[in-house]
Amino acid sequence: MAEKYLMKGNEALAEAAIRAGIDGYFGYPITPQSEVLEYFSKWLPRKGIAYVQAESEVSAINMVYGAGGCGKRIMTSTSSPGFSLMQEGVSYIACAQIPCVLVNVQRGGPGLGTIQPSQGDYFQAVKGGGHGDYRLIVLTPNSVQEQADMVYKAFDLSEKYLNPVLILSDGALGQMMEAVEFKEDYVKPSFDPTSWATVGGVAKRGKPVQLTSLFIEPERMEAKNFELQVKYKKIEENEVDYELYHMDDAELGFIAYGLSSRIAKKAVDLAREQGLKVGLIRPKTVWPFPTKIIKEYSKKVKAYLSIEMSVGQMIEDVKLAVECKIPVEHYGKTGGIVLSTDEIIAKARKMLGK
Image (cartoon, rainbow, N blue to C red):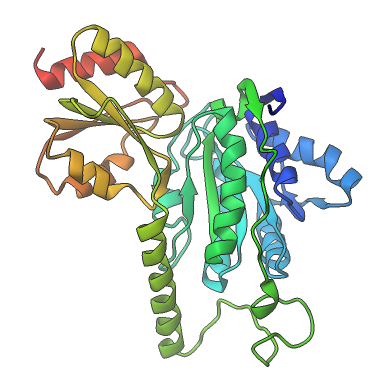
């Protein structure tokens, strides 16, 4: 039986990365994710693993670009304003098809905002916060345990698809302490970067490797975009992940991810005690988004309620999924205020007319 540890979510992220075989970390401190850097600063040098506290988030993401381009397991982490600063580099990395893991421990905004938890970075994460037609794979943990588990998955997916993977967390998940177990049977998948990475010498394909996102000729740029879209289609077909909770007989479906899904799940339990038939669809990936399952259950429920710690962002993807066939409404809090089960149930009661 695996040993249990009582850890903050940020610390669990870092420890899982070490156990997943991280080769280097580059970051810059910002609340509420600074414990990630603190943990790495203590342990990575002792293990002979590269650790750099960069002079800014801009520097950190470009270090990720360079180190990831060498075929190494590389990671960075930040919080909302810092992730905004990284967006140019993220776009470069996505176009150059560099595997890496990014972590955004979201806080309230816009602007400098607050250091309290938020989910206001959904658009930035799933629609592409930088320029151009690119996608990140976006994983959404809702517990300290999942923060750890999704680190392994993020590294594996990034190497499988040569694509950056974002773990979209928030300030509450990063700061809360819960029991966590780390995988004892994890085996790093076979990964040979010599065909594409800058590992020195001539690559297997018989010519020097050049990793770039610069394509002056429009035909080459278009070809690169089409190449990326083929990959994204494959990701959409194979990597959608979600959880269903009491959806079989639900008349109203809640849709929530991350911290909001924990509160929504409790609201489901309390609402059912009051005779309300509600259920929950929890996206574990918000890109690729679980469009098909949401569409499927739209034929069974009367309506959906999108529950988010924002003024309403994920709701747009829910509306697209149901194709205007049933009502979709929003309940949310913003500015760092956490959701209320009582208010969720009151909203559900109103939507069901009970």
